[in-house]
Length: 615
Ligand code: AGP
Image 1 (cartoon, protein in one colour):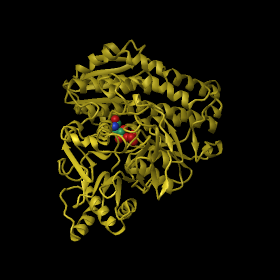
Image 2 (cartoon, rainbow, N blue to C red; image 1 turned 180 degrees about the vertical axis):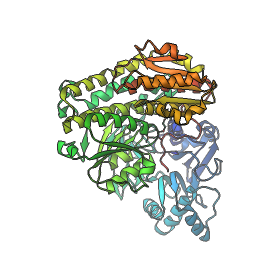
Image 3 (cartoon, rainbow, N blue to C red; image 1 turned 90 degrees about the horizontal axis):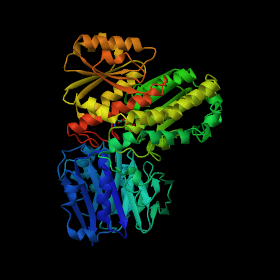
């Protein structure tokens, strides 16, 4: 996913933009570039590789510039080369454009523009925008209007920041489908793909909505000639977004989970003592009104839509909600749901789960649900995100910015937030008694203690993990809630270590996967004691009988497991579904330590982006 940063004001624009691009590196990229105005001239510098490579190519006189835009590129159209890196400009060098998204009709537009005499130098879709804006400007000489006219003929998704020699000191910014946020400093204004580059300067931001076009000057931001004011105040600080002495963001965010869960509970549970009272859970609203008993009693079904780790959290939420609210829950990949013409009606409640709130497929599914008259409730971590604005209700996880591409604290935050929702849902539907609600709230309030206990085993977990760092393949097995955990453990391992890993419902082993078992295949098993414990023990014995090596995530008080497996990692087992949060810790640390041992780029794994804003 590309990153955009723009600055105009009294400060050193190039320094700010470069620092801002570094804060967006977590999004994943393969090249970078910057455009700035030096006197009346447009200067463009681009580099394949990292922001540091770009910095080395920028001349000293760039320090004079007070207006600049920069970009980190995650290649979609055109190879990751210097000529394809952004910014792109028109043939007269008057307009420079940076872009996040995909211009779906770029081939048609390019042909038309070439017929009009435009000469293209790159393979990118973005270059079309630079020529279009220049063309539109020729007839109207109004910078924002020229951009408005250009985006009117563009199909697809975009966030654009544009600067021009014709309007020194101004940046025009707009978006459709890809996020863009403006920041209000003193004598300086900023735009960026998300709030991370902005927060060190100001917490006061304005999240653009689709097709809004703003003109940013050093002292003001305007839309349609009228001043724009901040729409949100960011609640977390720049320190929250720093590595804080950890070697990687991923490790920091793994260790932040107990504190994040305590904060989440404090935000979502008003008074644990009144757990049987709907008023205990004030965070759940639809269209500005608290979730009502009447509406929830009329809900015929819940559909969860998500991708990746968020989908796994949704699978765990299904078990929670079906237990407390006795409502059928189906969990769908947004990418499938949105194109399947699903059977839904206004009695269906759609839960969109997303850390970023920008995942294209989840967003597409939420939009379809709204078109069909369903209420949509989003469980998110980013305030002001597109999904936050387009859903009927939003439950923020409050776990702080998650920078590492591999989702960790967002996963456990999603489980916790959905757990609170399941309790609230059950109380309002009258299917969960006050004592039961209270017990579940108590489980959640102490889960951060269990998480700390699991984190305290980091050395042991690392020692176990490193025994398997040279495996070429790995299996993760679980039953019930252990199955989504198996999927999540496998996803963590493959996305940060590049080892092929597969999560399987252990009941499926005899239906095929057991053929994979040999002495080279480590098998990680979610083996907490519960209703299906005996079945999972059978799976372990089947694997051992075929020479497989078994690593069990086991209950703290399970004395029999030791003799059955090769390695044991214990978690405190309170026999509740909230255990799924605690089991996530060893799964995350196993993946982390193996990836570090293999020398992987843990926070920015190859080929991956933090948020998949394109399909
Ligand atoms: C998980 O570690 C990955 N980063 C990825 O699967 C992610 O969970 C998925 O892309 C969904 O992202 P979202 O939660 O921001 O919608």
